[in-house]
Length: 159
Image (cartoon, rainbow, N blue to C red; front, side):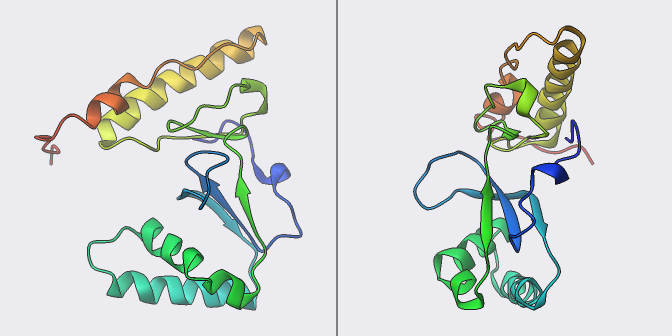
């Protein structure tokens, strides 16, 4: 959910920016919920390889395929300059930003079901509106439905 445009927070000298689930974790826990790429030969090659690998990687999410490409050194082979976006500005449910004034986006990561994401994103939007009205830095509401979604092994989506 975009609370304001994140584009001004991006480093224009980088080829690509990728969001993460948590800050300061060895072996970045990338999350493809938000990424930005400059169009150039390096990023085009990455996206072609990523797409091809995704088609051949049965049972893997696109994010896991990209993580494998990162870990395998493919980014380095291409000479990609990549930045990992801090959860301080690109907040998510895995790790909330402590500073609402710095947040540009909120990602409903670490959440299993769409209804849980919608419920907790609605609370985050309510929190944001309260913050904007008062300018007092408050806390994000707990992501109760998303935490609960991990325990719901019998979930069947409504069609």
